Length: 203
Ligand code: TYD
Image 1 (cartoon, rainbow, N blue to C red):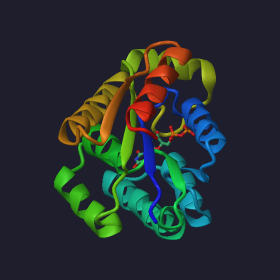
Image 2: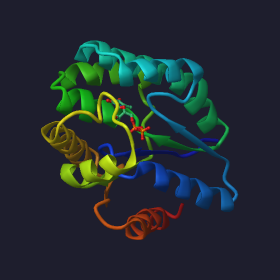
Image 3: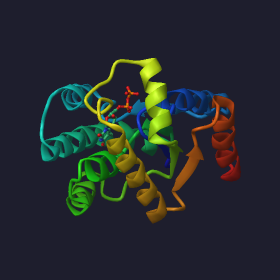
């Protein structure tokens, strides 16, 4: 038995958290076991690595290695066992974020990231990736109202434009898995697109 692995992606301020919670509720109402998790994080060890990645200065290679180290622990101890017992796993960011942030954002070599991806989670890929897409400027306005910035959120608009372009590239490379959701709209209209995609797949 194998459950579904659904990931959420997008630049900071895209509104992932709200919609992950809404989707978890909808799936639970339908009788699914839902595991709601995030990256970097999701296990004790990975949450400790998250603290470092978000708040400690480091170079791009260290950053990439730490997110993959966190991911390895997360996949092995939480994601894979949950999928094996048939649960639906909703994950706030996964490896596409590494290609978008460390790759496109920081300019780190995508070929090296692909190798790390192979080592860390080989054949395990999301069944569906919901990419909440919106202009970098709109996201910055939303963030400014919401919270204090971490290391990534303090980056300038040009950084987030590169990250957004990184997501667009990943989307073009995996069009079956990767679905673009227009997240510049109001909350209800964003949710309607997500619900329609799940409906279309009969999930
Ligand atoms: P985020 O998921 O936006 O959480 P919150 O809503 O609590 O701010 O924050 C995680 C940050 O980590 C985000 O800025 C992107 C960054 N990140 C990477 O740079 N690479 C990765 O591989 C992952 C998973 C996240």
